[in-house]
Image (tube, rainbow, N blue to C red; front, side, top):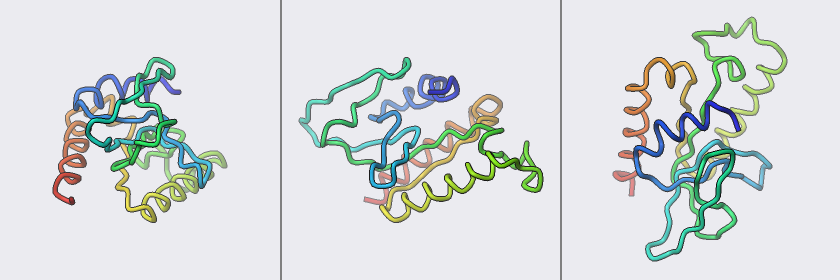
Length: 144
């Protein structure tokens, strides 16, 4: 759990009153996503859990169906092009880029939209981040 993810949950996701899983596991590829906005069948009793100060739905229940994945990408670790030039990426950054592409591919295969939000924007342009989330959520409503 990063401080950035906790900050994002508190200052962005929780303001939209959506149901989400923190650290959503795509078990078939052994990878975790920061957040999965989920659809829960009406009348289903939700089970909450706390992970490092973030209270979210427990993924251990079978009612979870992700409808949007959100990744909160740190500027350094995920090589925000505004901060890190591709030609200057270190091995860790290159590895993370490959993993991010792998995770994006998993979402495409499963027809789950993914929203990647940069750390820089979270701290420096919160209005943009709120708009990105709102637009992504509105896109879900019109795609059904």
